[in-house]
Image (cartoon, rainbow, N blue to C red; front, side):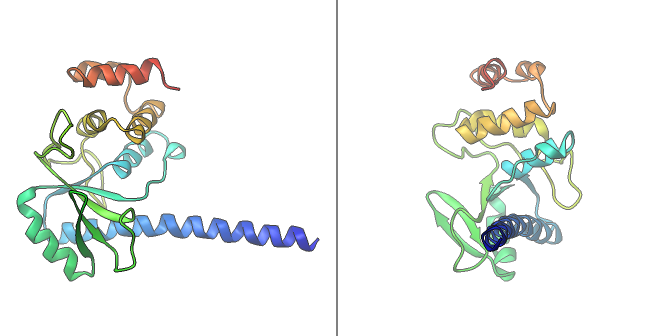
Length: 199
């Protein structure tokens, strides 16, 4: 009986850690969004959180947790963004060609706010630059990148996690096979590849 109780306690502790980790990411997302909204700095949430927001419009049960917070901003706003976020306690770092903000001095690079600059390539080998910061189709507490721009960024990046995110959007019915016609090569071919071979 004691072993069962210990195992249950351990499981509860693990679950509590998972919940705390997810809450910490959500708090970071809402914190940075609030600061940018209050400062009236144009931005859009991009990356895994944007995928989650769009998937949730169709099926909340399919939403996948994500660790970092990616924010699309205009490059000319970087000084103002630093001023606003650092005033609230965020710590700025330039790491591996990325501009990031950490919650505090003990935070890890993976647990950060990553800035993506509109009109610039995230990586030199990308076929297209990041999209413009424009009006969001969804988002009350935070602005989310429009769906077509989001899909394009995932097709451009084309890492395994980007492919998984695209499969999430396809699986939830947010996008479908007709979307291949919205893009030119190599992007339309990449999307077709996922549609033909979802596994």
